[in-house]
Amino acid sequence: MLETTNQQWNLAHTPSGGLPSPTDFLWSEEQPIPDPGPGQLLSRTVYLSLDPYQWGRRCRGEERPGEVCHGRTVSQVLKSRNPDYAEGDFIFNTNGWSGHGLTGVGVSVFGYMFPRKLDPGLAPISNAVGALGMLGLTAYSGLVVQCRPQPGETVVVSAASGGVGQVVGQIAKILGCRVIGVAGRLEKCTFVTRELGFDACVSHLSGDLKRDLRDACPDGIDIYFENVGGETFKAVLQHLNKRARITRCGLVSQYSNIDGRDPTEVWFQAGQSTFERQKCKVFPLAVRNFVTEHQGSFLDSMAEWLKDGLVSYREDIRDGLENTPKVFREMLEGRNFGKTLIQVSPDPTREDY
Ligand code: NDP
View (cartoon, rainbow, N blue to C red):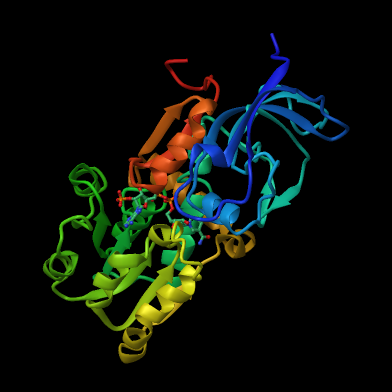
């Protein structure tokens, strides 16, 4: 039987930085579930993707107080008024931090067209917000398209066990590179080498990351895939080779800074003299710029790699929409382990359904 009321999280106010707190969000559980209009779909959220960029948007005022918090989702169609979609279809869409949502067909959000129909036979449907989704394309674009790795080169990636980092390192291995991860806790570092096959993984909690990177990269660093910024970046700078390439994908350690300075500018100033001395190429990354040209080839390659076991993907799936703000904060603090998802409702494609 269809539920009649919806649960959702709305943004309470524009946060002033720092880490998220429960008062930044408002819980609402009595919203009526709307009927789809012509061409629209009503869907039930199965998985909600939590991503560090969502916090940056909220702090910059790009999400308005009172709005449902933005988030990409994997959902199942409950009612369709579009001939291309049927009840029961699985779709990649943007219901946000909400149990249900209405989706228009052919809607562009940050350069992505929604919804996209999913084939549960191809890969777990949750992968649509991870390895086979925006995060996988981010890894592919920043590494393969921008940095053009060559066999034998040394690639370093930070937040190595996370949603983007684990894909970056595994693609670099497929391309014949020597790959070093940077992660936090020991169990993450062990996972990165044992399960993902990186050549080494060093911890930014060791107290001497600069030394550990020197030991792990005796030939220096040819490519750095930046996910965190801050102290990790400062240690990496010491080991960049001449003409190193750097993709600046994200600066998660700097998103919660509350000194009002633009994290990108702080990052660039820290690296500028090294970039000039070593003639480095720095590539900013906005994944939306790669969708039109590279999404097709990326999806083909990634589906093969997943099928052949060349890429594996760890997800950190937590239960219950009501827990979203808490899990969101934990992710930003590094207390996640793998791509962070909220299981909002049961996944009918799983064996344990
Ligand atoms: P992750 O799953 O990697 O989660 C964030 C991780 O960041 C944590 O698990 C933690 O890992 C690490 N971290 C947090 N604080 C610190 C710190 N102070 N120092 C070092 N590491 C820290 O997130 P995603 O894979 O989803 O995202 C990775 C990056 O990619 C983010 O910066 C995100 O904004 C960016 N991104 C950019 C896109 C673009 O278009 N440019 C698109 C998508 C993502 P650990 O415990 O190992 O330290």
